[in-house]
Image (tube, rainbow, N blue to C red; front, side, top):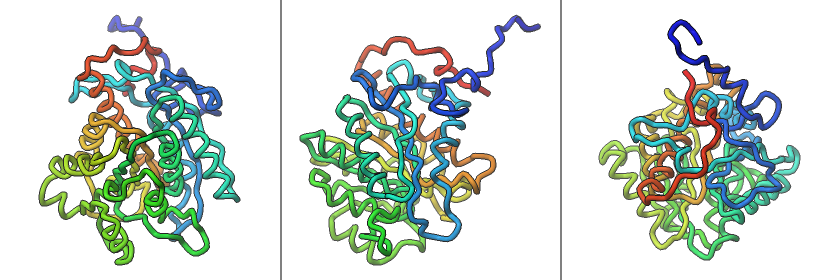
Amino acid sequence: MNDLNVPMVPNRKESLPRVFGDTPSFLGAPVVDRASIERGQDVVIAGVPWEGTVTWGTFTGCELAPRTIRHAAARYGGFLPEYETDLFDYLKVCDIGDIPVHPNDPAATMKSVYDAMDRIFKSGSIPIVLGGDHSFTPEIARALNDNTDGGIGVLHFDAHFDNAASFGRDDFARCGPIHRIAGIGKVRKQSIVHVGIRGPRNSPAQYAYAKSMGARIFTIQEIRKRGIEAVIDDAINAAREKTKHVLVSICSDCTDAGFNPGGPADFNGLFPQELLPSLFKIGEAGIAGLDYVEVYPNQDPYGFSSHLASWAIIYLLVGMAARKKAAGQAPPAPLPSLSRAGKG
């Protein structure tokens, strides 16, 4: 006891389970071997420390982000007072560490991601994936496609369309995941929804391609005019129209550069007070999986972008917990206390 008669708490970060080295699991979730994921897990956290072709300048190093996001998350718990909900009261979460990547073989890396996602979906769990660059997102959709009999919608938060057919000779470039997703059998093209599109790094051809397949486009201008709540309601409805599952893909540059130092210099973006409640609402509506990509830790010495990624995922998970809470579902067995308490 100290002078205030308050129990002393051990250093939480040192006490958390570790996925490798000194890297803690996300939010202190139990670590599970990826080869033996069993049914009963609501959410499975996985990292993809992958970076393929660098498409511009020195914006690189996002293969380090799964580690920095986990380290950032060590500060936090699962309770959000504004929603009066603790995600660990309703969700059973585990972390399987990082999926193996093959630095000189993009195709082998994509297969590795697919195999892990396939295993997660077969277990009945929802993958939350920490990237890495944006190129692996289609493998999540492909694995879901092969494990469902229903249509798939996509909520894509990004400054850019990311629907290029290729980049030079690279068929797996980070600027083309939505193009590859659109070709997956059960993905409904009209339920691909772009949120936050803006700025001079978009091309007329990519805009025309999105329009030609009937994808819904919510630019930042529309968000500013109508308000984020109305737009997100419409975005969710569009992604869920004639589909059974919704995947969410978040590129860090959907957020304004002022709040995203570990991302590209893309201004006039979403504010955290727009992104975070939106993700709560999306989680509350129900999702099949999510990835958060394109964080560059080397240019972000204070880790702000990794912390924002942690907050974004926590808000989404609390939304998922609120969905169970509203449905009257019983909470899972108690989890270790270290994964339930935040740290100042």
